[in-house]
Image (cartoon, rainbow, N blue to C red; front, side):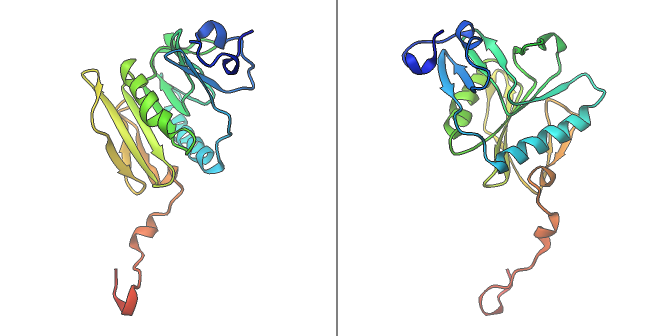
Length: 201
C-alpha cells in the first residue's frame, strides 16, 4: 500500500486513495495529496453544523440532499475532496460510497490551516468542475463570500455580513439568516456605544 507521506512527489489517484486508512483525512487535488491533520476547532464545527442543520431542515422532503464532512466528492480520478457542507440535487450522483460529480452547492468554513486550500485550490477546482455556487465562510469576520458560476467562471464574490440574509442561488426557495449561523444577536446592531467625552457612536 502506498501512502502520500512516503512519496511526496507522486501523483495519486482514486486507486490509491480508496486504500488509505479511513480514520485519516486526505484530499486529492490534481493528483496531489493533502492531509487534513489538525481537527477543526469548536467554532468551525459549530458554524458547519449550523449551516448543515438549517439547510437540512429546509430541504426535508425535497429532492435536494445535504451532506456534511467527511463526505467524499469525486470529480475524477485525480480530484477527490470532502467539503464541510454540500448539497446535491441530482440523485444519480449519489452512490453508497461517495458523490460522483459536481454538487449544486459547496460550503467551506475557513480556518488558519486551510485558508490557502479553500481560497485558491478549491476555488479553482470548483470553478473548473462547474459547481454552481460556492460559499466561503469566515468565522473570524462573521461573513460569507458567495461565488456564483456564470458562463463557466466565478466572478467577484458577493459579501454578506452576519446580520444579513443570504439567498441561495442554487436553492432559490432557501434564504439563510446568517445571524443564526454565526449565533449572533440582531440586538447588537441597536446598541449605542458611549465614546470618549460622551461622544455617541
